[in-house]
Length: 309
Image (cartoon, rainbow, N blue to C red):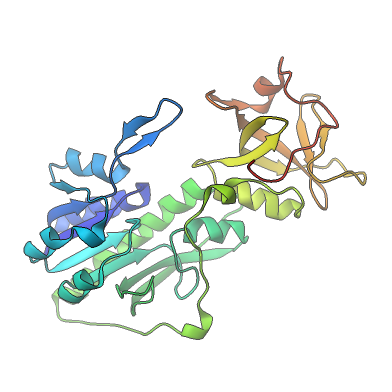
């Protein structure tokens, strides 16, 4: 089959690899290179890196809605998307059969952050949906779905990787069926739709005025990228890993530092968390032992401030 592939993050890379191995990928469409880090270094997407390694042509339109004719002109059998990051124009969907690999059990978690929200919400199970693309976001008919458990040890990186390989398996089966003229499509139940919209910068900040479970789930859903932010004084600290603390919250304000004696313990609404991995702006990720050794930024009794300002 002749396929145009569209994707951007690491979730999409195993899917691209499978398509390259079993089909003719005539074009890879991904988001433009972005400035990353304090030094603002222009960095290609994970999909672009993989496509170039495979010797595939890469197309990076700033706005797909204004620049999609190249895809139509190739006359692919299918256009396959996996976490691309832009809405497909209606004219493109109308002229090319478009399939999407989505990281949730639709109609739950339509949108750009289904894996993060599955972790935020403390789900015990999630999965992947292969679907036909429609002009309304993630609203197309379902072709095939698969599920997997979410482990307590999972974070965004580990869950994304597992879902990606599940997506590879399901998409491979769907393309095999389509090649043999076997077509499945089930409309989504509009009454069961929920959303997981693309994260905004303010969504990356921790709110300690929530339960311990909710705070820990937020950290899991943002680790290792982009990392969960916590703000204290004039410093924004990223927290990548934490666990439930056995220190009792003695009626202090949520966000209060209960201990900096070998452990960093922060009060939540109903208990406390123990921070395990942190990062200061422009610095390396550190274990909490290394972070607390000689630091003069925080002390016991200080309070983390809600929000990003």
